[in-house]
Amino acid sequence: GESVGLHLPTLSVQEGDNSIINCAYSNSASDYFIWYKQESGKGPQFIIDIRSNMDKRQGQRVTVLLNKTVKHLSLQIAATQPGDSAVYFCAENRASGTYKYIFGTGTRLKVLA
Amino acid sequence: DGGITQSPKYLFRKEGQNVTLSCEQNLNHDAMYWYRQDPGQGLRLIYYSQIVNDFQKGDIAEGYSVSREKKESFPLTVTSAQKNPTAFYLCASSIDLKGTEAFFGQGTRLTVV
Image (cartoon, rainbow over all chains, first blue to last red; front, side, top):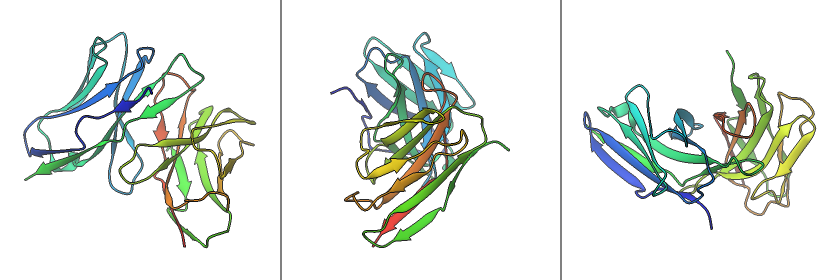
């Protein structure tokens, strides 16, 4: 079936290093993608989004890369900080349907001091 | 401040009782959603509403019911028919269903004993 998934369930990174979280999607019709950050016991927070007419988008310390050829999405966090420790979800929005957001299972990012 | 509010944060109920979770948004968003989150799993869509007085079943609607009588409110009732109701419930809203950021509430953790 069509799904959005993540390659690594847990990622441990040294403080100050860059983090890369990956996501694979299978629906080539999806044209909008979002990365969310979720801290324990809280709701997901929007980090950054990208549309399919772009390959790269940058925010504050974060960059999202979209490779439509291999249906791959990544989130890069520069100079990872302890406050970045959380679960990160990617989501796709299928413009060809009546809705909807499809979420991956998430990757837990652990920042080591 | 604009936002989406879920209440209560924690909820305990006895097995066999119905319980209603509140979700209110003042973002003037047309679309609202309810998701369920279980440990180690991605968000699963329960119900969504594109506009006032309209709602549609998501992927796991059995044992749940919703209403959308006002644009800003989308309450979720977990009925006694839901076989495994203990979970973390997340409400979200977006301007519309396609290609826009979804904002999440802080969640309600429901425990059925």
